Each structure stands twice: as C-alpha cells, then as structure tokens.
Length: 107
Image (cartoon, rainbow, N blue to C red):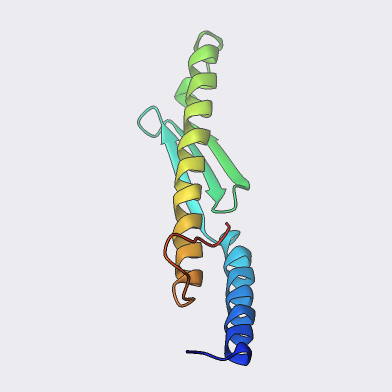
C-alpha cells in the first residue's frame, strides 16, 4: 500500500496531467457539418469556434431560413465532436491515476 508521500506525489502528477490536457484541448480541432457539407464549422475541443464556412450556393435571400438551420446544425455537430475529443483527452490524462471504484475525476 502506498504511503502518504506516494499518494501526494500521485495526486500532484494527476493535477499536472489534467492541466496539460486542458491546455491541449484548445489545440485539438474538430469539424461539424450540415447539409451534406454545405455548412461547416471548425471548433477546438475546448469549444472555441475557429471558422464557419457556408457554400456560396446557399447565398440567396430565399435560402435564409435553411442556412440558419444548417449553421445551427453544424455548430451542434462540432460541439458534439468537441465534447467527445475533450472526454477522450481527459480520459488519457487520468488513465494512470488509481481511483476507487465508481469515483470519477471532474472534467
């Protein structure tokens, strides 16, 4: 069984690993799409929107409502992918830290 110094060292390492993983999240990019790729949203795993692309074929006044719906759908797709990428990165950061059964690290 580890002594108190070992436990403190493991906790400090876990904290450093989590901080590094959090910093890395802004470097991981995902792309959400809607309308078969007519609207694309690029975001970081931290949720920062990097770029929005809208195919020029949608740039007609009568398409306004559809474009708005597609942009929202692409944002939601990017957000879901960013959440998955963030969860995977945080899982990597906490994989070496022994936790009691049922206990999870906060993300």
